[in-house]
Length: 211
Ligand code: SF4
Image (cartoon, rainbow, N blue to C red; front, top):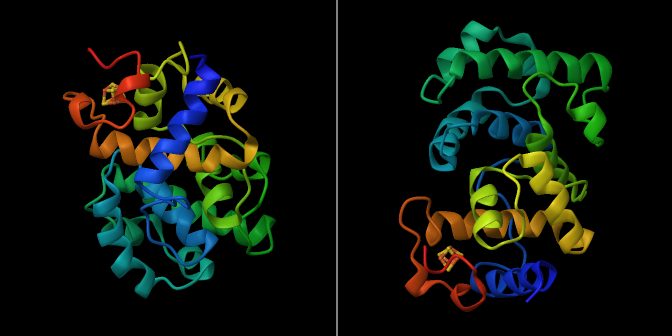
């Protein structure tokens, strides 16, 4: 089986197992809320982020509310997330920039998104796909990185190179779906320390089933 065939079969089986329309586990009701949740999610579980944002989005109901705050005040509201001080600073500065440079709307291009503080390519992909349905690339987080390697879909360790490899293997319309499905499978079955090969729906096509 070629990597392309394996990638397509992986998509097929994981969408049957998890969802045909997978989406991020982060809760949000607007593009800026997704930006906030995604920035908070670095080195922090989605479950914890959802707990934090449940309170946060009741207190800060618009981009303006975040822009009017200060990094110190916002930090107190997100203090259970890792690196909360840096994240709070980036969120307040991003809100100011969205208002000043983008008319209050989270931009829809990768180039503009990565100009916002704390937004790198992975976050940009999550926002474009999750908030706007735009498949600009594939968000490569720690699960996607590990599973892509184990499934023999890449030989690289650098997320940018892994993203390029994955983009060549499946149609653009599936880019966002692949990222979500690999994340679901990485959390549930193909965990970092103890992958559960015996219950994995990919075992017969996975080159790492004996690791
Ligand atoms: S067979 Fe094992 S290594 Fe391969 S995807 Fe499944 S759990 Fe991961």
